[in-house]
Image (tube, rainbow, N blue to C red; front, side):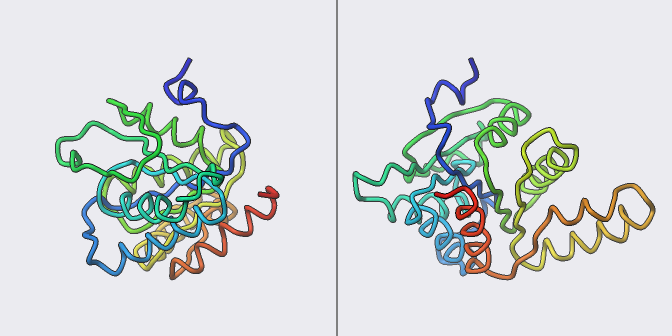
Length: 201
């Protein structure tokens, strides 16, 4: 049995994955934007899943945690963590924690838990997560799901992909349709609500 299955997560619960930088401080406007997403997801009664670390992960978990004080709201704030010395700062906003030593196992756990993926600005780790999700959706190894990218960083990435992957024929135009670029937390929340509605949450 996998570590994720051992958590006894409700298989029918709607879950939103949020990826993003561990290096953003609470005073940063971006932190406050991602906090809004976590709070909206919690208010919907859906779970939020992050890497369980500091920065934008903490922002999403904190927003969710503070939106679900009602014991009748069964939504959970979940951290799927990786053991890294520079991410040892505590994220106290978690109902459920699971730790992995290997990125590969951790990435599989994320995909087993997800219904929609939100990618906030980030570094190499966030790029790894985005690329992994994108390929699995592209080749049909997971159920179809939207991958919502927030901000100019990912708009530029999508333009790069169009120029360097699609034009030379290394990928198909329809592969870009998996990636949905938005400018703000509000637009990301709108995309989450669309999928929630389809799932009848």
